[in-house]
Image (cartoon, rainbow, N blue to C red; front, side):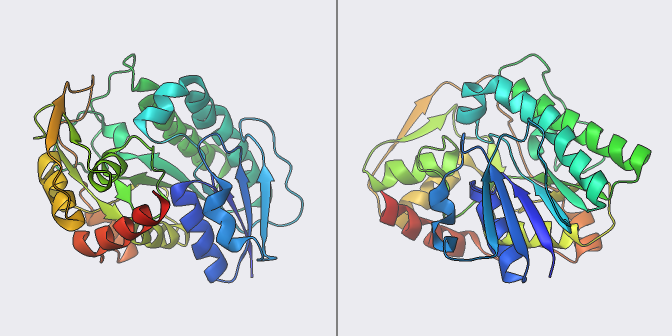
Amino acid sequence: MGRIIVTGGAGFIGSHLTDRALSEGHEVIVVDNLITGSLENLAHLKDDPRLTFVRHDVTKPLEVKGPVHGILHFASPASPEDYLRYPIQTLKVGSLGTHNVLGIAKAKNAPVVVASTSEVYGDPLVHPQTEDYWGNVNPVGPRSCYDEAKRFQEALTMAYHRMHGVRTRIVRIFNTYGPRMRLADGRVLPNFLCQALRGQSLTIYGDGSQTRSFCFVSDLVDGIWRLLHTEESDPVNIGNPAEMTIRQFGEKILEMTGSASRFQQRPLPQDDPKVRRPDITRAQKLLSWEPRISLEEGLRETIEDFRRRL
């Protein structure tokens, strides 16, 4: 079978993509500088001879010997807590890191999936978000290091596709959850789960009326894997269109954990999106994909994983 490079492969989504590539019979080269990733996410694969781990910052040139049959570029801080702590590193991996990865794809004539984000839509004025919506992004706000890094990454990816014929794919990832999320990730699900399981108050920013939609990681990985094996160069949303308010999500967490915790409100962060829901029509048509795992089923597996690690 082939050789797949997964940048950011020691991260939450990257490690699940590594699992998928190995299950499909490929050799996998994981490239990660561990700034937010963890080798614990790959510990179950430590005896698999088909896995090679390279500790490396992809913003610096990387030499890969031998053939490469696919690249999954998922290196980047992804939670607000992380990219606010590492704003310059976030901008560098979206620009220099993506430039290096696209150079490898060009040299090896390998298809590459570049991980973008729903954050390219900013605080959207169109709902749900379709791929042809250009977004409402503050280019100088505190979140801009992530939003603009991803927007530039998309532009650079399309430039390589148009100028050099690189077989690029762009996946716009919406809120994803599942086992291996960092306990201190800072996003809503790890926050709520850790607080509920510890008997602490659940922190809600604003009044909790802002909406999100939550996709289980196995569904996301399946969509990404299908996208890798197409010739689609335009961006594709992958996410779960089942929308709910943050307060409703917190109530579901309390119900499923059996926690007696209450809600505690704090001020809404600057530029926090008020709504978020993917239009997945393109993924349905191009990939024959849609999410299959219900919120209850996904949360049961995630709660079990969090209980074990807490």
